[in-house]
Each structure stands twice: as C-alpha cells, then as structure tokens.
Image 1: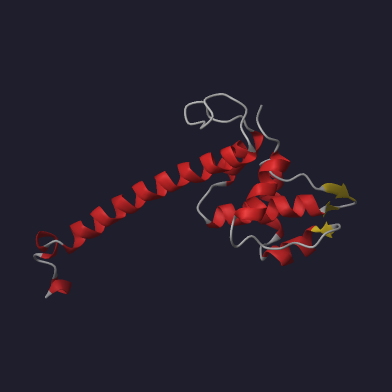
Image 2: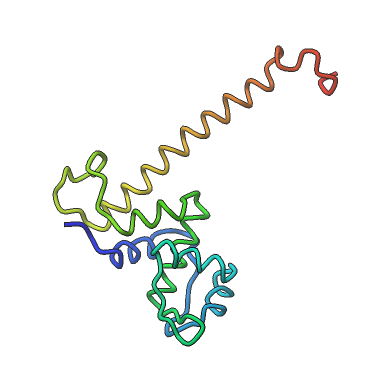
Length: 151
C-alpha cells in the first residue's frame, strides 16, 4: 500500500532544507502568497493541478495549516527543478513499479520520497553532463577559430 499524500508531505516538510515555515490556523490566499513569497496565480496553479485543495470561502480561498504545508513543500520542490505536473503525479500515486525500491511491497513515506529525489538527482546529473559537454565544445580550439571575439 502506498503512503498517503499527507504522509509524503509530512516527511518532505521535515527533511527538505529550505521549506518555508508556515503558521498554523487558516490563512487567506493573499496571506499565504505573502508568506511563501509567491503571487496568488502561483497558488491557483497548485489548485488547478490538484496539489492543494483549500476551502472556498466567499470569493476567495482559505488554506488550513496542512494546505499551507503542501504549498510550502511544493514551492521548495519547484525551486529544486520539479514541475507542477511531477509533484501532482507524485502526490496522487501510485509508485512507479519500474523504479519502486520495495519491488511492489508496501512503500513507506521515506521509500517514496527517496525514489522521487533519487530519480530527480539522476536526471540532474545527466543534464549537468550534457551542459559540461556543451561548454567543452564551446571552449575547444576548433570552436573558437574564426570567432572575432576569441581574438
């Protein structure tokens, strides 16, 4: 059985460095946007993707402490290079059977979070290698021949 989204958010909130601390209780959308350093459209994007589910209140939205934590973790994951779609898939589950570290057995929140972060680290490592090859190609002598800026 896969851990709930609440369990996943809880472990990421406790272990990811740089997650913004959010106050308990309910926050309006504009108050949460200010705490997180984002605009209200950014929060709307999380709602549209199904990542957050604040309560509708009149013409606005109220975020519980749990809703605010979800948004704070999402903000940090996005800063680390995850897309909104990747975060939504991760929270909705289930684990990817091809890469699940438990081979189909019950996953713990730690297993799922480790899988998410390890997969992202592998992609970033590949991207860094590609950028280094590109940079090397630019600095190789043949690449600068005939370049007036290189003279």
